[in-house]
Length: 70
Image (tube, rainbow, N blue to C red; front, side):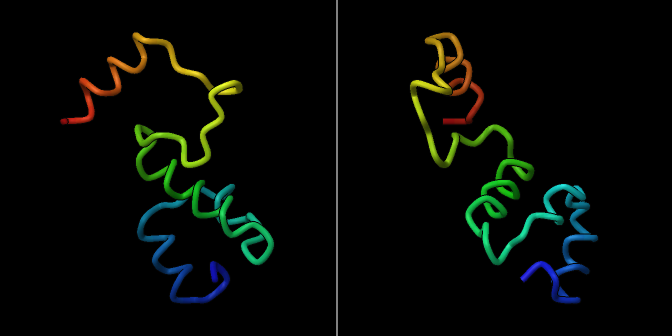
């Protein structure tokens, strides 16, 4: 998908980083899209959470909730 000319034009307009463009999309669709989501809004929660590997402290949770506009 990312190798289509129209897609490349949109990625250029959005200034998507080179490392996200170089992923093998046909084999790693989820990684590509999760990378784009994280790049577009790094404040979103992890789409594949692992509380043991990437836990949050109570202060981090409070900060996230406070700044998320909810």
